[in-house]
Structures are given as structure tokens and as C-alpha cells.
Amino acid sequence: MITREANNNDWEKLFLFFNRVYRENHPLQNYDFWNWQYGNKEFGRSFICLNEEDNIVGHVGANFGGEMAWIINVYLDEECRGKGVLGKLYSLARSYYPLAATAANKAGLGLYQNMRWIRYYDLVRYVKINPKVSNGTTETVCAKIVTSIDELAITNAHYFKQPSIKGIMLNDKSTAISQEEVGGLRVVKIEDLKTLEQQAWELGYNWMDYITSWNDLKTRDLEKNGWKLDYNSVVPWRLNPIEKDYFCDITFLSEEPIDKEFIVLRSYSDHGRIGSLI
Picture 1 (cartoon, one colour):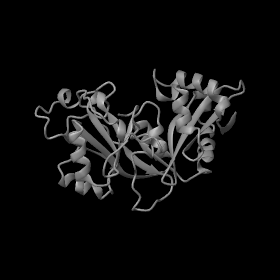
Picture 2: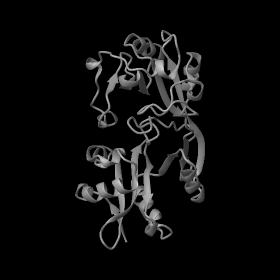
Picture 3: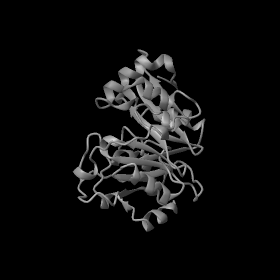
């Protein structure tokens, strides 16, 4: 078996692999998304294993952020397992940056436990609902809105070039993803919290959310301003389609120790990807 970095010439084989191993309409089944995620060495790379028939039988993706390589999209066919293939793919990612990951399921946590990675705090997702929304049910809060934000559009940063999303920059220079179809604003970076809230409600959004790591002291300001941890809110993680009462614990891990001041941003791994885990 051969392990190496993928390139554009591999797309046809990658497409067959992603269609075979992932659910229907998975983001990676779209070339534009794969190219956004892995087509630029500054932001991420895709690593593959090919068998004797030159077919892809294993894949590891790494998203680069915070001078870390965030491991995502890990899948190996049965013929790859137990043969050191995963270690070789991880080594390719490690040649760029130290390794880290976020994991939401038992299988992922088990993998990193077996590899003796370091487990940190779970990430936290805070939600605030517009005070003007009187009936705070999932159906009313996550209802479609109409707003005018064309003049706020932002496309000059990699994260906001993700296919099918609509990034905006607000008056205080905070950035967010607009999801009018479910009435929400997914905040990526907060500059001035009160100014952000005021403008979001003036634009007609029903709710906002913000994902970060537990050690981010910005969460104290969120709590003082009435933001709640998501499981105390009616706004679920998954909104396309809406899955009422769906919440999720996301664990942050790294292969080697990191500085205690390190903050996990929404844009680093796939825990905050808009269009996938939403």
C-alpha cells in the first residue's frame, strides 16, 4: 500500500471513496468543498492510502489553524486496519504541525485514548435568543427570517470562502455566518459583545451562538450578558434539517502538551463547520 498527500489529480478516486464511505450529501462529496478544505497548504491537506489496484482505501484530512494540524475525516477500509496505515497518514500531517483533534463520538475518543493523546476540556457552545422573541420554542426561534446584509458580506478570509455559507462582518468588527433560513447568526469572532448583540437584533436575527473552549475567559462576559450553554436553550446543534433537542459534547485533544492559554476557535477543526455539524 502507498500512503501520500492527495492532489487535484486524485479527485475522481476521492469522489468514489467519499461516496462509498460517507452518508449521502456529505460535504466532501463536493469538489469545491474538498478544494476549500484541503486545496491550499496554508489551510489544510488531504492524505490518502492506495491499494495495489490504485484505489483509495484510506483517508485522513488535516485542517490547519493555531499552528496545529487538526485531524478530521478519518476513515480506513478493513484492509488498511491494523497495518500501521493510520500512523503513516498521521505522520504526513505531523510534518506540517503538531497534531490535535476534536471528537464527538465514542469511537473517536477511543481511538485517541488508544494512542495516548491528551484530553482537555469539552468545548462549550453558548446561545442567546433575541429578547423580542416572545414564544421561545424551537419552532419559533429557529424560524426563517428576512434581513438585508449584502453590505456586510465578507469573503476575504479563508473560513468565509467555504462553499454555500454567507459570512458577514458587523460594526464592531465581529464576524459571523448568517443562516437566515433558521433565523440564526453563528458568531465566529467577538470584538464588542454589546455592540454585536444590538446590531444582530436590529437586523432581525432570532438567536446567536458561539463555540469556544472552556478556558476562554470571554465566556464570563457571555454569561453576564445572558448567554446560556446550549443544552439550556431551544436551539439545537443540527439545523439542516432541524433536529429538536439535539446537543453534543465536543472534546478537545492533542498528541503532545500545549500551552494552557490555547483557545480553540470555531474555525480550527470541523466542530464548528457551518453546513455540516450545525
